[in-house]
Image 1: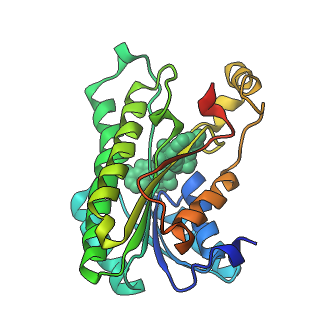
Image 2: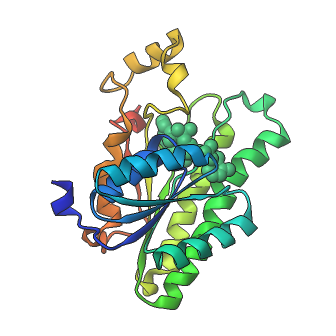
Amino acid sequence: MAKDSYNLAGKVALVTGASSGLGRRAAIALTGSGARVALTARRVDRLEALEAEITDGGGQAVPFVLDVRDPVGIERVVAEIESAMGPIEILVNNAGVSVVKRPEDFTVEDYDYIHETNVKGPFFLAQLVGREMIKRGQGGKIINISSMMALRVLGKLTLYAMSKAAIGQMTKQLALEWARHDIQVNAICPGYIETEMNRDHWQTEEGRGQIAGMPRRRMPQPEVMDGMLLLLASEKSDYITGTLIPVDDGQVLM
Ligand code: NDP
């Protein structure tokens, strides 16, 4: 169904944070719709295992080691990807981290870690990929993975929420400034989805209580993002830009 609706045959996509959780799933969904995907993250063993899984299923993916906090590395890896795979037409800015603390306990190190991974990295990656898209003049799609935390508040997540709100505003700025280059820039704002980022928490009493209080009383799995991701990656969304779209099972309503 997704294959027929969102045909990405021949497109080259770059996914950050493809070694785990939502990025891993995004790579599977994109290759399942025909895209060739550059799998990036720091843990190369995970990327190689995913490459093998995708290739076995008939898809095409190539791993590249990338730490999004390293601007020089970003430039080198984007050049490597474009020379090995062709121009990047879809960027999924997904890599992200969180630190859970009360506001009075955060350190400067926590701030830098979150900001460099969740804001600085995605901006400079979008800048590089966007520049190439502008030069080629054939448009493109940038999908930023923000969070429902750009749209609501919850305890112990101040720095994370700030970073995800920044990504939301970056999405709108880039969408406007690159509109005439036919580059659509959108953000998905997931609610809680079970990944390595939070899996242990859902086993605790507090975590189970939180799930029981959610509108649908359930913990979504990474596949729930497939539909929105493929829509935003495909030409079916050519008239959608600068949006922050919740995919959250109603969690932002609480
Ligand atoms: P995971 O912890 O499962 O995955 C995080 C990914 O980010 C890993 O692939 C990791 O790869 C990568 N990453 C972390 N730091 C860096 C870095 N410096 N350079 C490159 N890659 C990095 O988390 P999720 O899949 O849940 O999170 C993915 C995105 O979704 C994040 O932006 C997160 O904020 C967002 N999100 C998640 C929600 C959830 O409930 N799961 C809800 C809302 C938003 P590696 O360590 O190999 O480098």
